Amino acid sequence: MPKKVLFIMSDTGGGHRAAAEAIRDAMFEKYGADSIEAELLDVYRQMNYPGNKMPDFYPWVINNAQMGWALAYRLTDNPARSRLASRMTYRLNRARLRQMVLDHPADVVCCVHSLLGQPSMSAYQSFGQRPPWVTVVTDLVTTPYFWYDRRVDRCLVPSQEAYERGLECGLTPSQLRVTGLPVHPNFNRRLTDKATARRELGWNPDITTILMVAGGDGMGPMLETTEQILAKRPDVQVVVICGRNKALKEKIEAAGHRSVITYGFVTNMPQFMAAADVLVTKAGPATISEACIAGLPLILSGAIPGQEDGNVRLVVENDAGAFAPAPDKVAETVAQWLSDGKQALEERAERARKIARPDAVWEIAEEVWQAAHQSAVSIDRRAKM
Ligand code: UDP
Image (cartoon, rainbow, N blue to C red; front, side):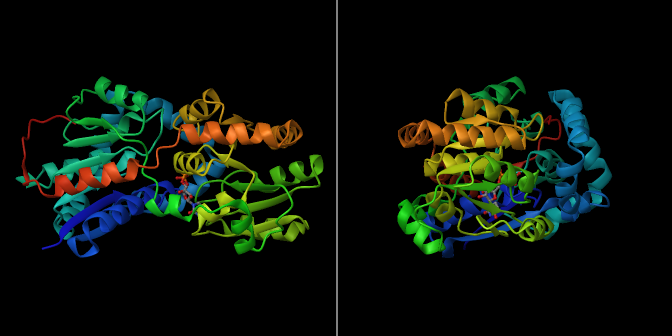
């Protein structure tokens, strides 16, 4: 009988789906596709209004209401308040989340979303027993407290700081393990040399290429940043990945710059990262982890306040890149890096490679697989979040 693996995630941003697919595909590869039945469940979609609209609202919120998002993050950035907020989410959606548990039987639950873990766990805990549970924390450094639920069986974290925060929330060392962030196994394999990747993508092989990507939803002032870069360095080409943001793609295309190439949501990120010389991106954890594996120096053009601040620190402290939180600052940094010369850029790339953890996904796959073979957990109703 194949093992049923249920991934608790949501299409808010691109990182949760990317993490779930990475773990799922590593499991398929390691243990055989016939041995596993995997389901990626967008838990927000299971909730009552307005929770069920969260995947639709999220890009708007991140683009237009960052201050509000930052405020909500600060208000809940402590163990007790994050638990209170999770409890409220559960109460408001209790019937639907309990139905979700009944509709999606599983041998193991793997949670890759900070805000959905505790309310979903509460739904599972309301029955007599539940499947083993593995949380995979997909924020890199300043991991929101929402991630840490004392009731889970395993909590796999990407960094020592994330581990310490788990202890602070009352998880035990036997629950916690530092693995790194899961990046798809194919990512590594699809990385080719620069010339091959450029030829395959049909780009000019000889021009310095700046790749811009801002999460799965194409957030932030990408057109302004492109224009400022070209104003400072008209000799480069800029490749902009707009993700799911169709309006952004149209806007950039309408601007009609000759040395700009735009894409919508791409499914061959390793090829793009292999082909580029410099990456300009918001501080998304998945994109940073991928760029480090690809050895691509990063200019971080922005960070979601609170949850992505630590990602900036990781990149800057390891000298793998720079923080330039405005279009003119990005352009200045690009100009500076290019005038520093090829050798300096290669050194930055090397430092990015040093913080990469390409094997994390295999360790996580093994953890989930082992958990799938454990028996169902009897519920201790007194167990605390
Ligand atoms: N991504 C992709 N195609 C795109 C844009 C983004 O595959 O066109 C992927 C990207 O490689 C990364 C994820 O989406 O794996 C974005 O995750 P990140 O944590 O960087 O940001 P989020 O979108 O979650 O805020």
